Image 1 (tube, rainbow, N blue to C red):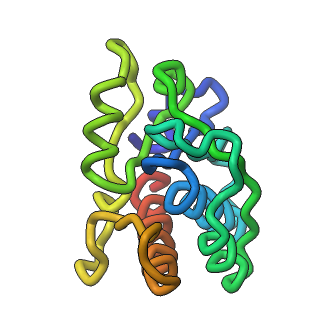
Image 2: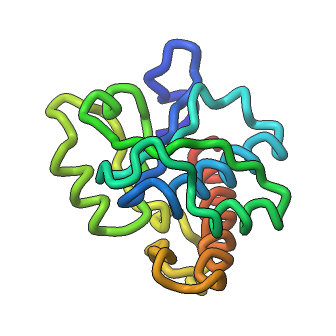
Amino acid sequence: MTQSDSKEPDGKISVAFVCLGNICRSPMAEAVFTSIVKDLGKSHYFKRIDSFGTGAYHTGEDPDHRSVATCKRHGVPVCHKAQQIKPKHFHEFEYIIAMDSSNKANLLRIKPQGSKAIVKMFGEWRTDSSYGEIVEDPYYGGSSGFERNYNQICHFSNEFLKQELS
């Protein structure tokens, strides 16, 4: 989908990032993507940038403190409360982007018939093979996993913008 193919009447697109609980990877992706969009002066292309979890385990909670700390170290603000993705969201977003194959499979399972939402893994936009296609869940590891996620997400965000807004 290119910018001119967007289904929004005003030409703007909506993007949702999805992981399991919506406290580590997807809120980081939302914050980093939003920051890069703003820094590159591309905010006018977007109607909505948000994030969700496939599970409802942490609904209403703040993002994991390690995700917030990693973003903060890089000057990226995080302002989010965990929420679960629902079938209705497939009609509200042009792109629903999973952090891993398990969440992508869950998204495809709940995607309603007739939805034109593009469901992909974030890593499908990578151009540098040194970044794995999967954004691994850093929850049970140390802070280095969050930093690795941050670097991946920056690369994937920049590549998404190059490839989808051209």
